[in-house]
Length: 284
Image (cartoon, rainbow, N blue to C red; front, side):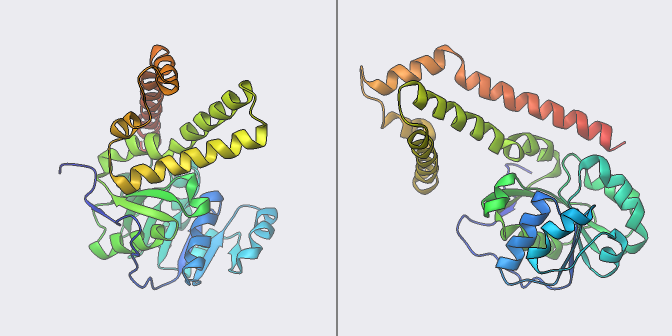
């Protein structure tokens, strides 16, 4: 297949399929918590979640759903299972509950873990792999979704419904998932590094800290909206800011002289290589 988008939720469009059945979130860390909050905000409350400690259970009590420490109990009660644990924990969790997964939908948000690996470990389960990012905490994630070999079209719709509660979704071929992990999965860290640098630049030229942060945030938000709404290539929009012999061209010259674009490209490529390494190791 050609291109990234096989199916997607258009930006700004409500995409709901009347989610039904109990959903279990196994491993309610930050992403798991965000998914739960997103579903609750959309009016879905037939949820149960697990965590590893009593302290974390108390932290999550505000959600108003059952938070338990027993994975098997949560899986037994549910027909849609979201695995939201660290990649190296996936094998152990699946072995713990695999006898309870027959004919259920399992969605994994663990980086680098393939659908083939899960299907090989657990028979009779329908698998979907998803890669959201930390922007899920404010409902602005972009989540890539890849169906496994046994997943049905309706399973993909259900996954899009779930992840549509925390942002936008795209359906992609699984061979792209390691690249997407390095790109949009880790992407907020790159943007935050740039934002931090911009704030320091503001401090260097005398802008007060609070003003520097607010100006940087609004500039990033506004520019992102400009690109999203105009659909104009970033290079073309940039030309609107540049005047001959002006201020902006001096800054852009300094960025190019220091290899700004190449540095970003190298950083993402290094992250991609690491994602591939982890995938090869974790899926053995």
